[in-house]
Image 1: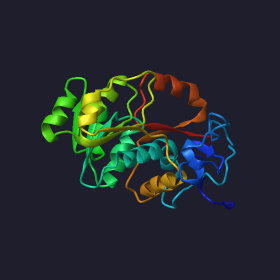
Image 2 (image 1 turned 120 degrees about the horizontal axis):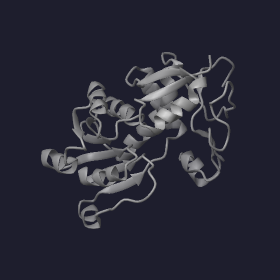
Image 3 (image 1 turned 120 degrees about the vertical axis):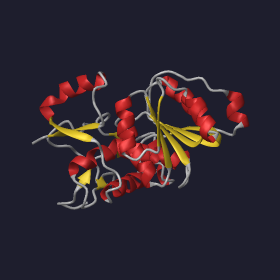
Length: 261
């Protein structure tokens, strides 16, 4: 990194660099990692300190506002989609079309996948359709498990970004045989797992946490090529408390990027 470089500070502030996970390219699993805005000061300030070995280099065509959500939400869902092991032409379900899910739809399409968007809000499903989703389902008034199984025998992959525990059980149900579900949403608690179905259908359920430095650069490059656009609004940092109030009430579509100017 040199003076004048355009960079972004991600969730993974730094890691030890020498444990088994770090040396095998899984620094996001390092037991000594430090996280931006959690274990070190984050970006709700005019200045922020970053480790130059872990920042993301922004493509020239990617402006700062659009880049900001990629540094967390974008790389998280991009990595999650890779974890589903879906190939181009295969079908992935995106469960939850919020700040993460709306970006997941775009990444999935850019990666050549067919996309089923699932949510309980018609407005968010309309957004998903506008962003390229091939099929949308409202889980509030549709048995999404029965519908996906009926139409195609289950999806090749499911990415759960929702924070509702019911979405996790639904996700397993929407998987087809030999399918893989990646979990990005983090609600507290547990969810039921049908052992018989999981074993006989050879289903895989795995967690997916953010993304490595390599994943981050790939996610930024997709955005730099114009294949992914974050749905966001810009507000001054002085609105931070109001922004959090709206977030708790579920009144934010996409992301809010705060400006210090």
